[in-house]
Amino acid sequence: MTTNPGTGPVEVAPGAARPMSLSPSRAGDFMRCPLLYRFRVIDRLPEKPSAAATRGTLVHAVLERLFDHPAGERTAPRAKALVPGQWERLLEARPELAELFPEGDGGAGLAQWLTEAEALVERWFTLEDPTRLEPVEREFFVETELESGLRLRGIIDRVDVAPTGEVRIVDYKTGKAPRPQYAEEALFQMKFYALVVWRLKRVVPRRLQLVYLGSGEVVTYDPVVADLERVERKLLALWEAIQEATETGVWLPRPTKLCGWCDHRAVCPEFGGTPPVYPLAVVERPAGS
Image (cartoon, rainbow, N blue to C red; front, side, top):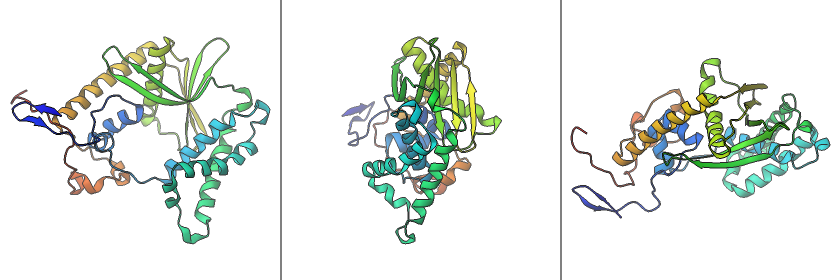
């Protein structure tokens, strides 16, 4: 139970909760469209699984598991052989993923999809040599709280540490590398992780590395403290905007070309829809504030 000024107690919808932390994905959602952030974080509306996103999850799992094997066994055939088993594990955890593939095609759709996943895995070997890598962390959950009280969290695909102590953060992308004008947006996630590692370990990562399996490219960036300080200021400003929207209930849609892929068009005002009743108590602000 909470209280709104001048209105008395207000019942908060069961399961609804105010945002307590920020991840790269959710920060990206808010920057892309505040209403999308609300639908995902506040309302927690269901979304249909996509074949592309699920393939990315599968490829990530294969590349993570490959490092369970000795260096000499980390070959492309071995990695490709892991694909069916990792798909079965994924399907066991999320049975609804079976709906991605039609039942009446004799399994052709699934077979093609798995072949595409294997091709992405195989392409990785043209970009990195896993026999020469010994990651310190894989699928590494990181979390820290800034002096402001903002909690940052995320999962890093891979962390490498050189004998000299230099840290490299690696992220696998199953899509294609973005055009140069969109490179900064792509690096935002990596700088977010670098900020968290810096605040946790007091070490600025030597290199941020994006491995694009879709186009066979590797994009690197070497951050400095000034970069991470800028990211921190940006995140603090984002968090203030998120808190403002949370308290007022005002989450504005931001139409872009990506709207065509959004699962929530039926409840989006930009497409004639009506959002669900806001599940949190709204703080009324004095006029002119």
